[in-house]
Length: 355
Image (cartoon, rainbow, N blue to C red; front, side, top):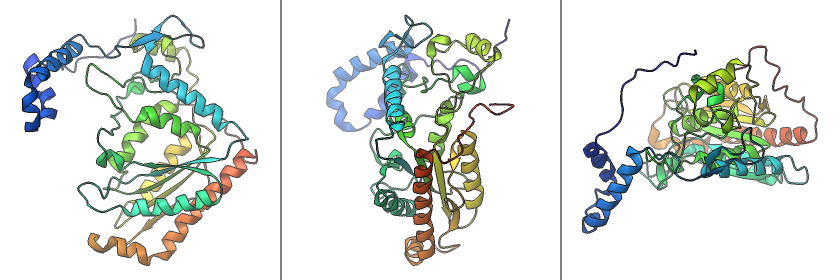
């Protein structure tokens, strides 16, 4: 019998504590006139939490699954269908090439910082080069996580560390309606990654590491690297079944393999080179193909100069602007080579110790 290790303690809230937390989003006095209907909403929300209505709307999985009659969450099935459509479009040679351009900074001029990031400016220059070459550019601005109402990427729960088949593609941890863990942006981002022929990440370095808005997305993409595309094989989140399935020999499907990438990291003191290497290693591990050498750069803008004048430093640094444009151009060229079959294909299952 396989042993599942537990013992971290009960996290179930009392009714009073649940209501205290739930009502925090209604702190504004404008809600005081709605006390009666709000109390009814609290009661329904408590029932959903207490009875753990994680996925209240389901349907039979249908064709293409190991157990077609097993019921799966509607929202997960819808995301899966969008991924499949994106995959078909990505493989359609009659369509224009597509680049997912990720702006990895958290700063946005419409919230507390009051000023745009240098990353946004650099990514916008990269966008100009991508579109000038005739490719579609899907601009993903992760600073919307800090500036836009309801926009969030929920944290990875690390199901993969329990067993790889427990980590589903796409992620099945969210939405969790019982816990109020809803409106997860990743349900939109998985198809956008899938649709891309090339990926370009432009990011600052925060405290030697990736900004939290970028790291949230990175962690949630673990399901793209070996994730289980069939929830019915584990009957949802059945831990024992997932462990047994992995021990039978897991094939680690690489759902984003073969796409090309470039990485641009900038900082003002330290850590840019370390982060650039880390991002490159991550993408390479997922079997994406680096469009190097010009497409991987790390630079310092306004080195040890005041933050207040950092945009002026970027204005005066024509070289780094040219290098970013060059990285975008190198990616465009790599996309063309890849679609023409002139890049060595990725052997997704060639690792002697896949993980």
